[in-house]
View 1 (cartoon, rainbow, N blue to C red):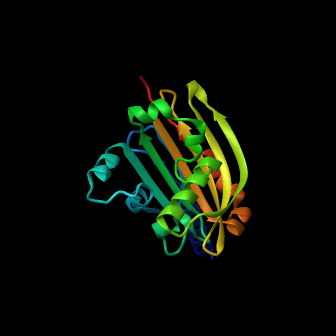
View 2 (spheres, one colour):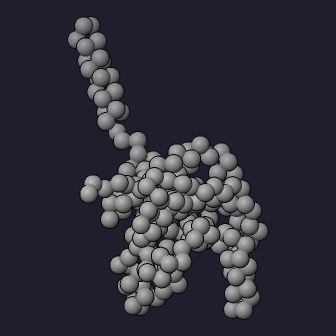
View 3 (cartoon, rainbow, N blue to C red):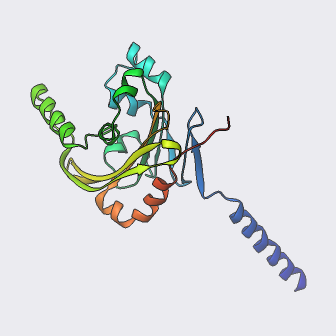
Length: 225
C-alpha cells in the first residue's frame, strides 16, 4: 500500500512539473530586434508573405516586391483549427498580424497620425472615401463596407515615440469583423511597428480581455547603445 501511494504521489508530482514547464505564450521579436509582443501558444504562426503581396499589390517577382522585402518584416498568427492567411480579413477565431516597416526618406518626411491609422486598412474618412472612389473607377467590388468606429486613442510613448490605437468594425461579406489596430512610430521617425488583431464581432466581444493583453504586449524594445 505504501509503495502504491508513493507511486501515485510521484506521478502527480511529475504531472505538476510537466504542467508548470509548458509555456503559456509565444514571445515574438522582429528581425531588427526593435519590436516585441506575445501571443498565446494556442496560436499557429504563419508565413505572412501572401499578406504582404495582398496589401501592397506587388507581383511576387517584381522589383517592388524585392525592395519591400528588404525593409519590411512581418508575421502572422491564427488560432483557427485550420490556420490560413486568408483569415486576416474574416474568421470566427482570432487572427494576429504584425509588421515592422523601415521607412523611406519620403515616408519619414510625411508620416502623420492619420497615416498610422491607415497603415494597413482604410480607417480615416479621407482614405475610406479614396478607397470607395478607386473601387468605382476600377469597377471592383468593395471588400470593406459599413465602417463603424469603436475607439481611437493617441499614444505618447517613452523617448518621443508616438502612435495610435484604434478599434473599428467592417462588414466583410456577410459578417461583421472587428479590428484592433496599434501603430507606433519610433522616436527617430525611422520605423513603424503595427499590430492588427481581427475576429468576428461576436468573438471579439466575448474575448476582448484576451485581445487587450495581446495588444498591450506590443512594445518597442530599447536596445543598449
